[in-house]
Image 1 (cartoon, rainbow, N blue to C red):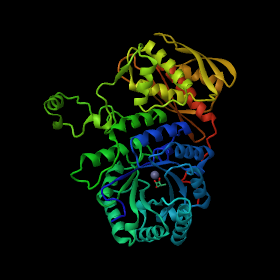
Image 2 (cartoon, rainbow, N blue to C red):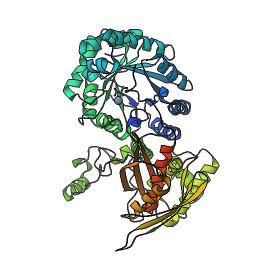
Image 3 (tube, protein in one colour):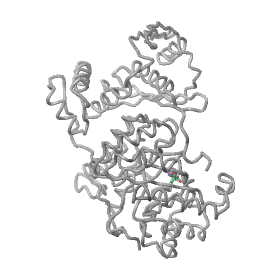
Image 4 (cartoon, rainbow, N blue to C red):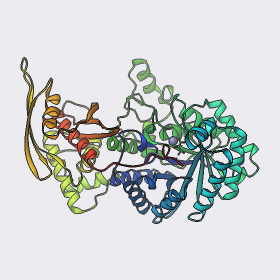
Length: 518
Ligand code: KIV
Ligand code: ZN
């Protein structure tokens, strides 16, 4: 058994690193700090803040998270390379508690085709990397990438060697989401039983969801001795995503009759984190998603409603409020004052960097309250998200917009935009009002992008709800998501399109940790 307290399941959140590797989910430094603070409030044990060597922006984001977070350990990813580990160590310097997570691939296909290295060379490089990382922090995690397709004997050999070299956590990734729960659980049990010094490290798992089994595999691993799970909010992540944090945490909490351990998370923060990540990344949560989907606790059918009214346990295995679904979410209206606004924002874990930022957001709240009778928590969260979407130094800015849409006529749009310091007028027809707006923007911007996704979500219920629009644009392999919110969905669409163009106009070159060569 491992050296960890056997009753505690460590939650390692990688939303800011693996989650961000989803095409179009990139986040700014300030957005990452906001998410990290929400994770800290939820009492996540370890926050993987990024891959510092990827770019200057990534380095600064990890550094900013390391400075802002006091109660969780902040982790930086590094390939098993000297320059990566040095950069991670540098970025993590301000952290109260830091961890370096280093990795190298161990499956035959990765070693041969990607690394072009022999197993013994891989082992030597892993040991060297762990020793270097131990010189910078005493909290070092090692991952044999693609462990789920690696040979057991080699895995045992390399893990024993890195534990001897000082690794304190051994993370077993199912990098390509290939494993099946009973077999993955057995792999973890075998590793812990066969590796002579396995008691000197905590065993962790990191599962991808290509076969929809990331949570199942992670839970099977926990039943077989793993005491750390790597996961993301809303299951965000490469391809089909990572194991979803909320599902793992609630499965373990709900089935304490089966699991020999539990997390120390404050699960009432789950919904707030889910909404924050969704609104920052523009990745909506599907309504039937477990725990955080809009229908997760809705009882549509008459039979279910009758049962729940007689006794909640007939159809509910968890309480909605335990994961942060509030019973009464109507909070404010046009008569609410600045103090009430500030207090509610604080309750929602939203801090303002300055009085000026508070005043600006309050004035936007008043504008919204003039258009919309009841302001819900989701509206307040969208107001703040919009401050980050329309962040400093916007190159493209909407000044005004007029759209004509009439039965039997071709819709057309006229816009006034600021492009840099110039004011520009743009007009176009379109097959609908949104199409006309996007065409008008393109007539003056000529971005050569391809629209990959356009979606509108009502932030709350009612026809006066704000629409939150997500636009995903692709240019030369680079994908960005833009967001905009407004009670007028055509204006929200224009804001979202310009937000995506602004993201594209910022430099975006960064290395992908798992595609770079070693
Ligand atoms: O999926 C994976 O293997 C990873 C590693 C870097 C841990 O993300
Ligand atoms: Zn991964």
